[in-house]
Length: 226
Image 1 (tube, rainbow, N blue to C red):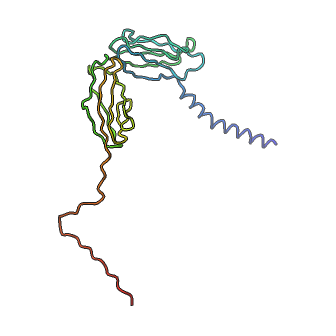
Image 2 (image 1 turned 135 degrees about the vertical axis):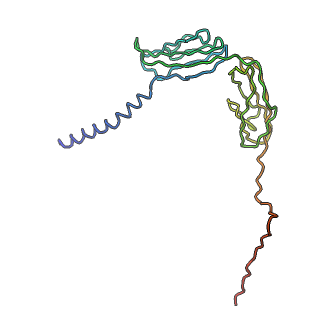
Image 3 (image 1 turned 180 degrees about the vertical axis):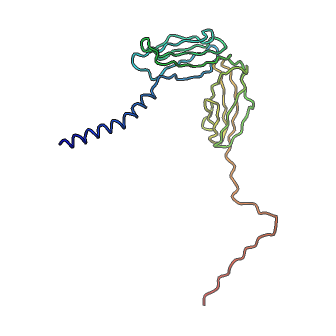
């Protein structure tokens, strides 16, 4: 009976020693962190910052290094989230300090660059021709050049050509589609026509070569059996 008890205790100790490092690693990976560390904004827009992996009784204090560029709204949900506003052109850093009582648990930063709103948008080409199953990224020309505003892309015929949020067009089937890029700040738009055609079939038969002597093929004749 004593031997069984000793073996059982040994097995429990061994299992604990194996699982302990894994549990400590899992706990270490759940540190508080921001949803973004870098951000580009345009004047007059806002964005919601959020701190993940907060534990009980932990709160977040948000501050801006330049309130004239980035102002901070009222934090909600015990300080987990806050809305930041792009007031004017420039750069600022939002500091998120995680606290438990008066003790500082962690300091987080989000670097933000605010650029002017775009007042002009157009595509370099009005028409793009693609083969099915091919991709092409549309890069509209936005003015002023210093603006980091990103347009919203939309296809009027996604069964022919779809477009991603970054302007990557995927040719799906033969036909035509119009891609529209819209600036949210002003409502200005630019359009590009996409013409999709089927892939050209590859030639399975090779053209005969005229160089050198023509090759001859000798067929062996069957010898009739006696």
